[in-house]
Image (cartoon, rainbow over all chains, first blue to last red; front, side, top):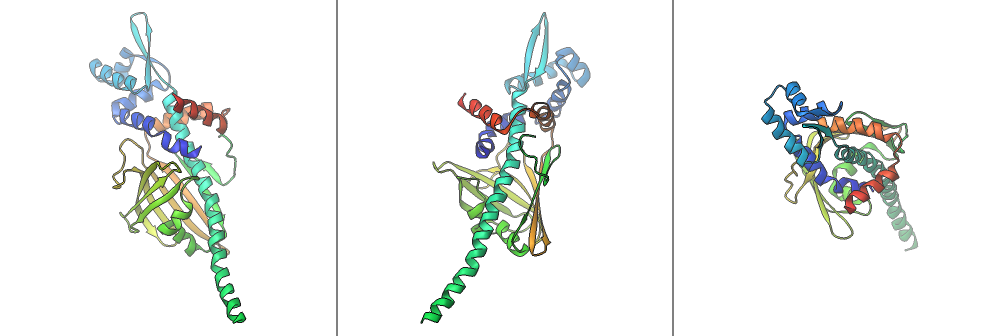
Length: 130
Length: 166
């Protein structure tokens, strides 16, 4: 399961990261964390021009990070949970990976330390026989 | 969250610490983390193998390796060493890469700090993993907290398989 997480998430992660590699878009996500907002409200809080806000929202929509709720003649934007849940799962997978890694390391250390002692004993035994 | 309640695991906002006491001398512990012939034997998650692993053990040097699935699918990863204090400490940043060790864009890098402490002939290894910060991570952690209370690791696994089936 760990490996599915680690490698399977790269496409979602990539989309998410690329879309958020802009301070304004990151700020939009931060604002939407507390609840859905209209374009007008976002424009006011961001302090940038509305066409710019719309452009950023388009990128975020295409990356499936936000979705639009049409209400009368207003467009209300809200965050979609899914990409962030995937990201969270991806982070969790790293912890799991380290746990498993420590288990394997423990076994490996026993194996090599046992091997270190045994061959010398055997060669001594052989010498005795000869 | 999920099923990880062990006391030697701490989860921060965008980082976690994992530690364990190993029955091996510290010099050997440092070797198994820094020599390709050792890493090839234990680093890969089952059932993956590490067919290629190169290490340039110096600050700024690259640790480049490949994970291969039983079906022959390969994933390259690379780390860049930031600090090397044998046999006590190892600090590196990691991300996915291609076969020429060029990092994959769009994947957040993470920083790993490994410390090796002697304890009566044994060695305590502490792995501190920190992810590049960013709003996405903060949101992810926030949502994960809300959702994570009831969701088990198994459920999460099923969820991922559903996603992949799409």
